[in-house]
Image 1: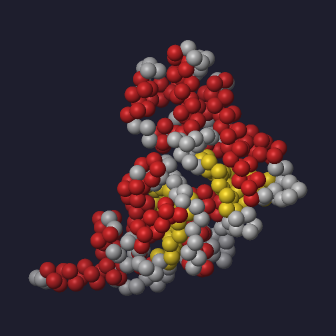
Image 2: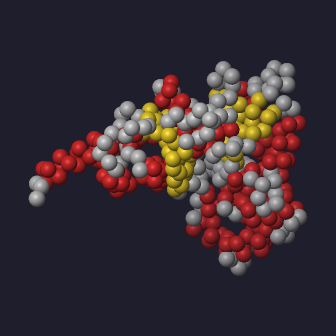
Image 3: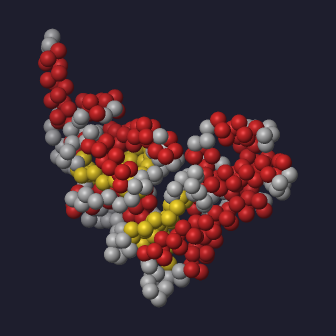
Length: 370
């Protein structure tokens, strides 16, 4: 029987082979690496992580990210919980991120030693200090040879619509919302994306919150009656509008409230004027975010007639429940910027993050944009 010292030596050897640093990582997430062949991996991969207010997606992509035929060599994909630290807290956010990365590598049967680069694109990363915190944490999980980039999730969404080219504007309208962009000179600008406490108008959370407020206004006589009342009460299994008070304050997590968005869209489709007003207001607010970014970067040129891409992403902009916010939104934006080119990405933002990770390891750029 081997001694405890032998066990420790074997464990250390396994950690070196896998690139693992168990004292700083959630060790149980990486136990699969002990089942992977000890030989050094022959090929490299990159990880792209898209972390939002609803879920976190990690994709494992073979390097190079774009094959010669233009296809994306996707090896695996893993989805976990929200990783917006402003919503769920630092510990839960980091747990979701690490679970997504470990899950994607486990599905692909690839150890951390095969990872060439990782890009975290996260909602709630709004300052250099946010990025530095994640970089320091990631260095405890991956070998020092791994290139690591940290961006706001909007950067990856932009890359997903422009094949990795960081130029133009992107509007994300999901649980939260943000507009950001890059000019041809690399200048960066953003608007909104500050969370519901400071006004994320146009987001799924904001739309659902306004719908809930409309129900309460209708109940006490401050506002008109609305079909939102029976529709949302039925969805939540509640009996009276007053029951919403307990429901909201029991758990006011952003994704939980934003999940009521389809009900609001369904009521608007059926002609409810209150629901339509809420969605019309969202369109206006989202267009204001786009305008703020385009104006600051002068994406439309000095004469206002320059062409630029506008990438549109997020569940709010999906054409579901018979109500399409994209059409009135683009009509509003096109009135301000006639040469705008709307783009609905053909790949998800996590793939955009993988593209940025590949660019990172090719250029070894260490500067992060927030």
